[in-house]
Length: 250
Image (cartoon, rainbow, N blue to C red; front, side, top):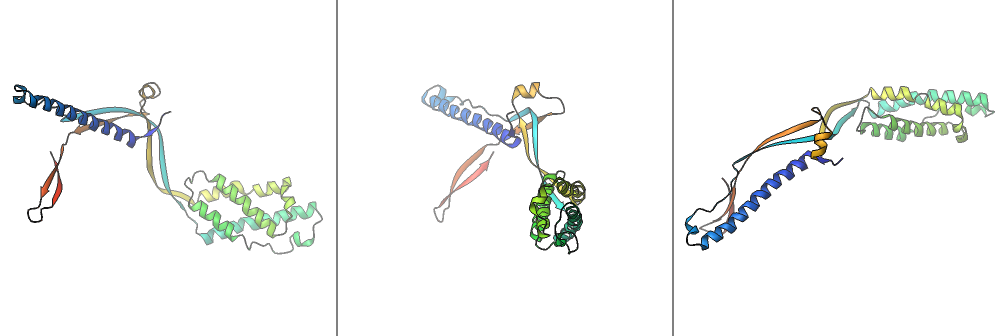
């Protein structure tokens, strides 16, 4: 589908109308020169086309709307750190228990040592920044899953969970378990107080408008154009002799 912006389409139509007037005026100039050289025609007024008013009815098919949203994430950085650590600590505890049961790892992994979260703040802060600048608050799932995976890998490594065990299906399921709830909780903290249309895309091909549309997808632009001539004159300052252009409208 051939898409263009509505502004480009209307600008082209208006420029074509101006170009038509320019062509008509240039032809009038040629006629004026012919009349001036003819002994009889020189007494006649030179025929000149003037478009006093034009009404346009232009059907166009709306093919897309580009919208930009001013999104707000209603958690500051400190609140988000606390929120995320509250999700990570129980996860590490459960992973420790599972690994202790299924392996012969030393006691330092099986839950007797405090769970460490120091050093993951930069990852959590980067996650917060991405959410705060995310353009589509209705669909943050991919960003949440990507960041959750990176952060959980880091926090498990901090707590001496062997990296090779992260591929264990049980551990994989444990890591993925909180994601649906995490997505829903984060989405409740995201809102769009303002959305604006950046560009309105249309299809102006006549066959598409005629055959591929209905009353709800096509709208008609009705515009009335009134001709306004422009004259540029030169005004000379009597004191300084300097000349400056002056624009006058009919």
